[in-house]
Image (cartoon, rainbow, N blue to C red; front, side, top):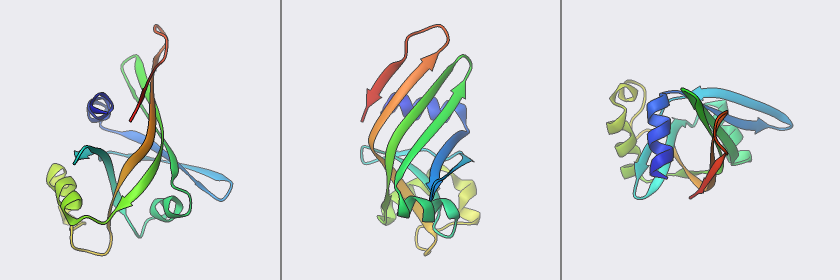
Length: 130
């Protein structure tokens, strides 16, 4: 899990894929955090991505850096723990202009049943489960 975290942090931006009915939806994300041994992302409950994940929590994350990329298949699980929200907002102070750990909008989600596959054109793919 730590290797996945470090890779996503290094990339800065990764892409999150969800579904809306039978339509795939992909958008850029930039938040990644470890809290109490779980890997978290952050969004707002008012956003379509949140609604899509509450309907179907299966998601994929993809990021590319240099000559390597990672693809992560997982379920994203909402965590209402205020401490998890505070931890995320401390890690990303710029979010504090729009989010608060105590508002009804801030949402943190952790990756569950995650399978990360690191790939490149030069090496065989390598898989990590967490």
